Length: 350
Image (cartoon, rainbow, N blue to C red; front, side, top):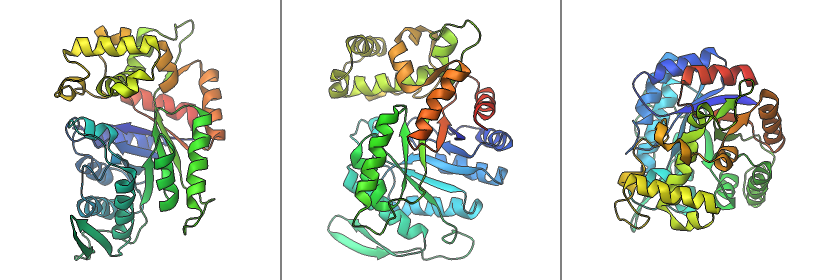
């Protein structure tokens, strides 16, 4: 299985991209969460100039964040800096919208957005709608500004069949956050293949599938729920608890211990599940390193669900199962020591 890394935009991000390339990692991604992190297009521009081989991805943008013309210009401009190395990840904006206190967009809007990006980034005109007005648009400038010749890879953020079906109809790949259940991946791929029928996409085409997680290899005699293990995986667990705290319907589907953790999180953040401004209390430091006082919220059940923690052989066994389920690349979201975590991943998988 291939290996890659996902980070938040921050000063010096290009140095991490260079190190990832030196380690032989396949891809380097930057989050698109405007009210929490820096801008991914700015960050990847720096990475594009500093690297030569590694794939560069936005993971992920959304029509609820950026218009199709603006997003297409960003991706085609990146493609001019790093020809053929750009990956466009797109989703409904589940987190990026919630950090604004707004709901995610629909699968239908996502599909229209991806279709428009695919047209524009390939140099084709596309229909652009604002309200009742529809116009055909295309890039009006040529030359070094944008690259519409080298292909851009498209992937759809999916946890369920609706988004996977969008990927199938648009001939795109899949990316999923913390989805480590091989059965769930089989379902996503089945939904994607079923959606291809009746379209021009090839059901057996080699679109890539990516999973975002964290890896913590246990030292000899280390407790799998040690402080080090919780620190390495806690940002993923807290992201789920944030989502559940912000979305009571999600919290209701959790077990009793997890619901108790959600209640504790809300109490610590000084908000409630119905407070209109709860997003301002829940999402600061989203996907950042957790505070030591929050380690008790990093429940073993959620660590095991969202991250790969165990001995080398145990982790490789789980990775093999994901590979057999059609996952092509393991992306880690490092927080405790990104260079060391990237090196560990490279040693494990490359």
